[in-house]
Image (cartoon, rainbow, N blue to C red; front, side):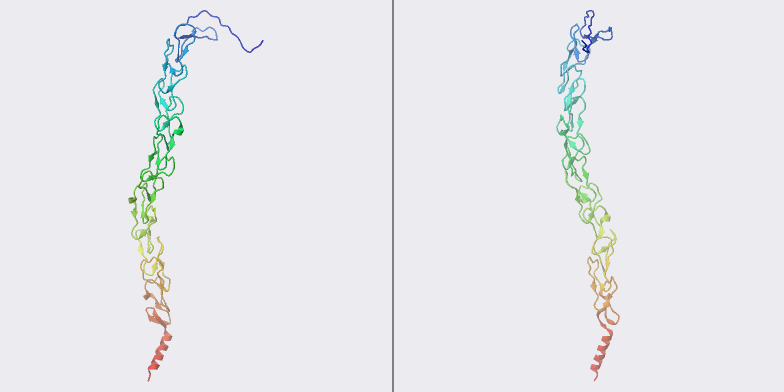
Length: 332
């Protein structure tokens, strides 16, 4: 009956195999060396054709052709399979091959599997304070106000120093305060404080408010200004930062900035210097003035009217009639 298998019978002389050797057959004819050394991780004590004995699990042996039980127990915190030549450190432990001592993964590191490879690092922005971590989820993200300072394998996250902040979880680096802002506290979790109005600061990472500079005289700036050019001439003043001059009489400026002063309209005047609002007044009746006039004296009587400095300007015809009537009244 056909089975698909070939049965082979071996016949040989009686071999006496010494200790540390096992009988080995070769299928390609007669092998001149039928006895082979027991491999590392095995041993054979007496003579005979028996197979070599395996070291048990959690044992190891590096000796080849061992004639006694040379198997040694694995060092603490390591394991091995049977017939092993070395032991592997447990998860959470790392060490040297060939029986080297295993040590726990340091804080900031972890190791998932058995073996003698190095422990993996918690990535930047994460930390692990315990030793011997066996899983990546032992690495925790940095809290708000803290970071790993751009480094990995950290045992803790460090609080942001004054002048820096962290408003996100898992920050790799604390953020610098931008110019015009500052922080005096450590571990800050919100964006920086803006410098006060009418000041400016061009410093990155300012840790005190004293780094701000005051705007030049008669100039003003909003909160959080970065440069001196942010200082603008105030209301009632015109020019550029550092050279602002007050609006002269007959002019005014309501808003801050580098714009020119506004003129009082023709027929108006204003005596105030540095006016911050429209203080222009109308000339008296029957008088007029050029725009931007700075005094009431600038108002002069219109054609056909007379008076003193724009006050009580009268029609010349009416004035002559009144003088004629007065003359007639006085005649005898």
